[in-house]
Image 1 (cartoon, helix red, strand yellow):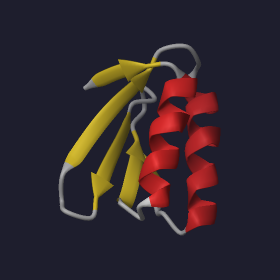
Image 2 (cartoon, one colour; image 1 turned 30 degrees about the vertical axis):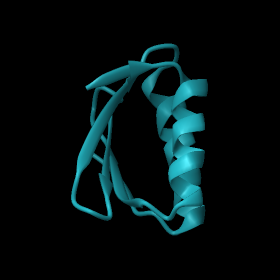
Image 3 (cartoon, one colour; image 1 turned 180 degrees about the vertical axis):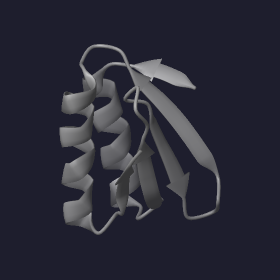
Image 4 (cartoon, helix red, strand yellow; image 1 turned 90 degrees about the vertical axis):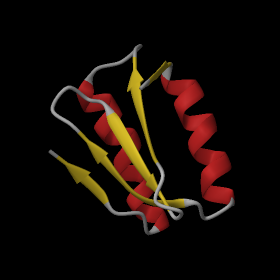
Length: 72
């Protein structure tokens, strides 16, 4: 699991969105985000500079791009 700031997380997501590389993402009860990519690879992030509610808001915006977002 990678730890990062919300800004770094958003920068990573923008790159993946440009390549249509994200299949889905999950936010667990502790606010950790797990991406599942089109090739089946999974990658998890713990965003260290905000709370779970902020993480969920950032992730929900991805549903506007057609990416399924699931909260556990």
